Structure formats: C-alpha cells, structure tokens
Length: 455
Image 1 (cartoon, helix red, strand yellow):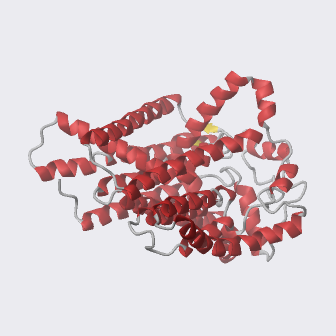
Image 2: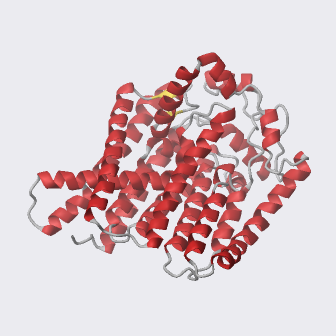
Image 3: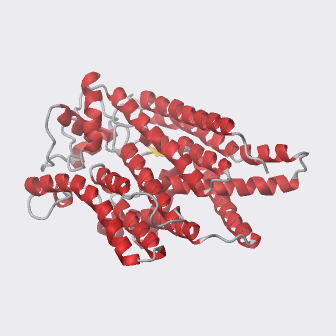
C-alpha cells in the first residue's frame, strides 16, 4: 500500500505537537498552584538555584504533617510552601535550566510550567523519531505513538508542572534512540558511541529515574559486540567511548554529594531516606492492609494513575471513565498480540540487528517495570507515571495494536481503491488518540478544577 507523502506526515506530526501544546498550556494555566505531586519542592529548588546556590537536603525539609495540611486545605495563600524542600537531593540540571526563566519572570510559577511543557514537547517528537527508526516503512504507527504521548491525560498533567520529569523523559528517549541507532547498524563499526556517553552523562545530572539508561547502554554495547568479529576488543573500545564523557559529567555531581553528605552517599539517597520521615513505608502498608488489599491497591492505583489520577493522587475520575480505559487497555493488549501473530504467520524473517533491536525494546519496558517495583519495596509509591521512562515504547506498542485493529476493521468493510484503504489504515488509529485528547480536556474541567480550586 502507498504511504502518505512526507509533507502529509510532517503536517500530521505538527498538528499532534500543536494539540499537545494546547492541552499542556491549558493544564499549566488552569491547574491551581502546587496541585501537582512535589511541585512546591521542585519550585523551591529552582528558587534556591536562582538565588545562587545549590540546595542541600536537611532535616525538616520534609514535614509530613504540614504537607498533609497543605493538601487538605488546597494550598491556601496563608500557608506558605517555602519550607517544602525535600527535592533538594535531586541532580541539578533541570533546575539550572529553569532558573533563568524564574529570574526573568520574577518567580512566576506559570512561566516555569510553560518552560517545562516546552521541554516536554521533545518527548512527543522523539517518540515519533524512535518509531520511524524501528518501522521505517510504516509512518502511521509513528504518528499514532506520538499522538498517544501527546494526549495521555496524566502525562499532560505532569509535563505542565514545575518538575524535572519532562527533561528526564527527553533525556531517556534520546538515549534509547541513540542505543537503537547503534544496535540497528548493519556494520558494527558504523557510527560513534561518544554521543551516547554525553547523553548518559546528562542523564546522571538530570534525575535518578534516568540512571537505568546506563544499564541499557551496556546492553546495547553487548548486543553490538556480539555481532563483531572481535567481540571483546569492540566491547572495551566502545565501552570506553561511552564511559569517558558519562563519568566526566556524573563525577562532578557525585563528588559534590560525597563532600556535602559524607560517607558513600554519592547520590544523596541515604540523606533522603533519613529526612523523609512519615512517608508510608511498604512494610507498614503490608502490616496494616494485608497482602490481598495491598495488591489490589497496587494494581488499581497504578492503572488509574497511569491514565489520569490528578492533584496529589487525590483526584480520581468517574469509575465509568476508568472502566472504559480498562476496556481500551485490554483492546490494546489483544491488538498487539494479534499484530505479533500476524507477523509470525507472514513468515517474514528479521535480520539479526532488528532482532537485537526488539530485544532491546523489550529490555527498556521490562527495566522500567522492575525499577517501579523497586521503588515500592521501601515506600508506597503507586504512581503509574513512574513507568513513563518507557512511555515512547509503550506508546509504540499501543500504536501497533491500533493499527492491527484498523486492519481487522478494513477486512469487514469493502473500500474501493488501494489509496483509500491506505488512508483509512493511516487515519483510523488516530481516532482513539483524538478521544484521549478530549478526555484530557474533560478531566481538567470536570474533575481537576472542581476538586482542587480553593473554596
């Protein structure tokens, strides 16, 4: 079937980015101040950097009782948030980039939010680019995947807030893209690896959720070295090319932490765990709820918060919305399974680089899930957004599933002309994406604003 023209693809991508910007700007402007998880702490970090110093996490920066009071009273103006500083242990890059915006607009929270959502637009574009790399002959899934990222309500809410999630996702997506470019290269000597090392170094300065990129880079090195004539020398040479810039970037931050926090606390995590007292721990939750109730809460809250659970995880949508999203999710699972089966039955063989690329993609998703489970070993962190480091590939899976459903639908409908069928196969998967975008708007006006606005 003929593919849409390059011009049509670019116009569609531009429209998807424009939809993302409209949705994110609505959320940035309309969402009441501080009503996104951890936003006051991120904002105060930016304020400290704008004042000329990197903050140091100290006892008292996390007051669980006061934070609960702030949330219960919807962050009224008479209760200051200046003491909420428990994100001060985070790597500094996002805050260094946001500080000039803070200074230029006199500490305006909406200005910082707008800066963050502009960074988040990079996730949409990189998702498209990553999908085009994996499926160069099928532009439709790449656009659908980009649309999924752009329209996902919870993702929109997080991109439109003062936090380091947007930059972390951009860095992670760029790192995965560079890994896949090297894995897909037919010639193991093709291309340089140092750009991946630079991105990995930037990841070390961005957020702890991007640190798994180091393991993914190592896996990509192993996959490529396995295909080389001299595997061990190739692995060592390419590994050094990645590690040199990565450790140069990360070492500066880790050295600072060793000086500030002492011991071997080069990430600041020990200080974080000591300061964050009062946060519900997994052991306490298991003892109080029991295993069945814990698992039920884990799966339900993870599912709901992946799609949309707003504010500080206190604003839920109507259960009928989650039921519809559950049906949609099950449909995506069936569609993706169908796409895999169709591919196998076609007998089309994949060369070794493409098989390695699929293994790498699976590793990205599995690692994101493993990290999410690891977070929940110590603290109760049932937040589906912690799976977003793998969102571009999750979105691509959704896009392939929707394309498969479109193919099944077209078998039931007789359309005249190859071009008409090709256009339908390209556009039909975008229809659910449009519904997701409408859900994002509906959620903002129907659930978020009525429940979070000050009385």
